[in-house]
Image (tube, rainbow, N blue to C red; front, top):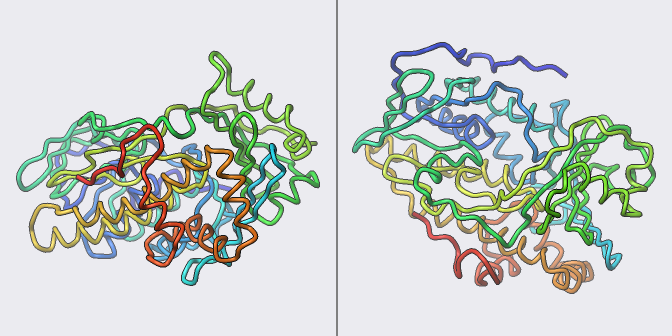
Length: 422
C-alpha cells in the first residue's frame, strides 16, 4: 500500500516570506483537514500547516458511523480505500462476569448511519489531507507554527514558512493543544483511563479472534487490569491496547500488554498463533478539557479542544462533526466581516462531549456496566438508545438515555457541571 508522501497540490516545505489567507489551520489531522475541506466547499481560502511529514503513525483506528456521511461530503469514500475495513458493530465482553453485549449499528434509533470503518490512521489521516488539498486548500507539511499574535481584525502567525496573515486561526494541533497550553486552560481528567499500552499483531486467525472481530467488529474486553481494545485491520491484523487507571509504577508497555494477554484465557486464545508486527508503545495522562478553546479570532477543534478516553472511539468522529459545524460559523463570520461568535457552537459541542463523558465515566464502574449496560440487552429500546450514542448520533432529542446523561454531574474529578463554553 503506497501513497504519495505529500497530497497532490500541497506545498513543499520551502520558506515563504508572506502568506495571506482567510483561515489558517494548525494541524493536518482529521479535524484540521476536514475543517479545511468544509471551508473550501464554502469557497474560502485556507492554509493548513503541519510540522510532520505524512503519512505518519497515529493511534485511534476505529471510527463511528456518523462520521461517514460527513467524510463523504468532502469526497472521501472509505468503501473504496484499501486501508479501511467495514465496521458493522461493537462487541463488549466482561472477563469478571462473563457478561456480553453486541452493538449492531444498523439497529440504532432511526436516522443513524448503519456502519463505520476501522482504518489505519497513517493512511486515513493522509487521505483526509489529500481531500482538503484536492478541494483547493493549501496543505503544507513539515512547516511548523512557532507563534501567533491576535489583532482586532486578523491573526499574525510566524513559523518555518515565514509569516501568515489570516482573518481567523484554528488550532487543530491535537494533544499539543497549542491554544490551551498557552492559555494554561487545559484541565486534566482524573476519572478516566490514565495510561494505554498498545501494539499491533498479524496472522490473527484463531477461532476466538474470528468469532470476535471476524466480521469487522471492534471488541472491548473488560478485565481486572482495566479494559482492552481489539480492532481488526485489513490483512488479518489486529490493533490491541490495554487502558489502565492505575498503571504499575516502573512497568514498561511490553510488560504491561504482554502480561495482560498472557494472564487472560480469552486474550491468550485470541492471539494464539499471531505475531507482533509493531513496537510496543505507551501514552499516558491524555484525558483533558481545554476550558478556554476560542477567542474573537481563534478557535480549537478536535483533540485541541478536548480528549476524553479511547474506549468508545469518539475522538475522530467528534473532531470531524464539530469541524463541519465550525466551518459554518467561520463562514458566517467571514461573510459578515466580523469576529467569531461561538456561544451557540460551543453549546452544541458540549452536547457531544458531555454525553460521552458521562457514558465513559460509567464504564469505569463495574457494577454499572454489569447491572445496566449488559442488562440492557433484554430491552430493545435501551439497546437502540445506547447504539445511537455509540454511533456518534448525539444531536437528537428522542434518546432518553442520552437525556439522562446530559442532566447528571460527574461523580468525581472534573467540575460539578459540563465544561463552560468560552
